[in-house]
Amino acid sequence: MLSVKKLHTEYPDDRGQVVKAVQDVSFDVPEGKLFTLLGPSGCGKTTTLRSIAGLERPQSGEIAVPGTVVYSSEKNIFIPPNKRNFGMVFQSYAIWPHMNVFQNAAFPLDVGSRKFSKKEIEERVMRVLSAVGLDGFAGREATKMSGGQQQRLALARALVMEPKLLLLDEPLSNLDAKLRERMRFELKRMQRELGLTTIYVTHDQSEALALSHEIAVMSAGHIVQIGSPRDIYERPRNKFVADFVGLTNFLEATVEAPEPNNSGYRVDSSIGRLSVTSLDQFAKGDVVLISVRPEDIELYEQRPDGLNVIEGKVDLKVFLGEYMDYQIKVGEHQVLARVHSSFKAPVGDTAYLKMNPEKCITIQDDAQYRKAA
Ligand SMILES: Nc1ncnc2c1ncn2[C@@H]1O[C@H](COP(=O)(O)OP(=O)(O)OP(=O)(O)O)[C@@H](O)[C@H]1O
Ligand SMILES: [Mg+2]
Image 1 (cartoon, rainbow, N blue to C red):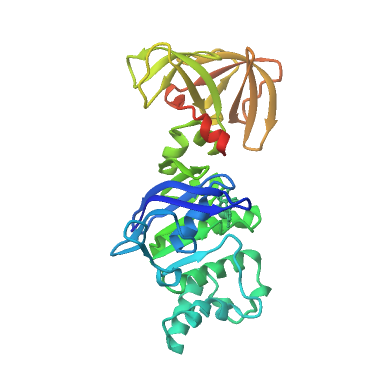
Image 2: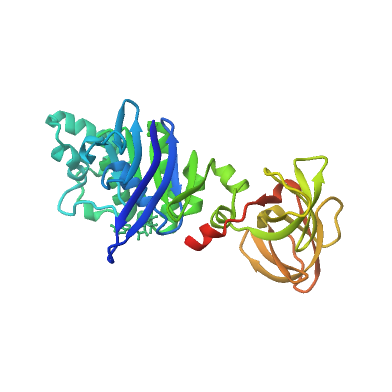
């Protein structure tokens, strides 16, 4: 549905130099899917979205939807934003305070190049207001609505032109935690029901994991990994992704031998010998980094049977309701384990870590991305 190829977008900075905001960014979004650009502040998410919308003019690359190339440096094509028929909700969504809900939602139809009859406007506006659950509010002054309702109104306004593509830049950023979670579900339901091809921008990893069919993790202008939420979370390809998306423990290790029974290796890690899983090929003696998520570590008071059992001492514990975080000291290293609150070892006691080899994965170290971010 949308294809972005080798996109480069730059800005001039104050001192006459260039800021390479987006570099060599390529991805495809299938029809009806929600694709997320995820990354820390300044990594180039908004710039990518604005380039797709036509609000920025890239240096090079190609952006196309079926049947239309909207930007191509090679073919010298640049279709202006109002001709692209994309709907957009900006990072700081703006509703018009002097208009009521109906007038706000109808605004793009009033100002667009195509003329709509009064009846057509009425039909379209009521359809999108009902899609976002605001059909009962049409006559209400827009400022007399809650933040979440205003957010939905901004979304209705983006939908009213029936865009081929919906571009959402942190559309839930101004809401409190509870409302954000509820809107997350509503947005997901609406996107799926209406089959809207959507590009979603966020720096919030849990939002990205909850909403997306596919996620592109960005760092310093580059895409560093593209995959399903599960791929990104369970199989991060590099240190930046493992660190940015969720909590993890990093362990330095040296490869000892391939593991005959699975697609992995035996390694000597900073906390002891482990069996680990890998998508990469290593030789004996290679230095690798192991990532293991806190929730993938089991804790026992008595030594359990099986692979990857390491003895440590409880150093600190934090009660978090349903679960608890334990800092376990193994030699000089601290390992974070997140376990059910029913595990109750006191600080100073011995605890045994047990890690499923499938959950201990090797990742590529990528110092340059971490520095640049
Ligand atoms: N108009 C501009 N002029 C100059 N530099 C800019 C401009 N807009 C963005 N930049 C720079 O381009 C880079 C990418 O910015 P962008 O707004 O795309 O980041 P972002 O990922 O959306 O961040 P955030 O999460 O904070 O919104 C940053 O280094 C930023 O300072
Ligand atoms: Mg932004």
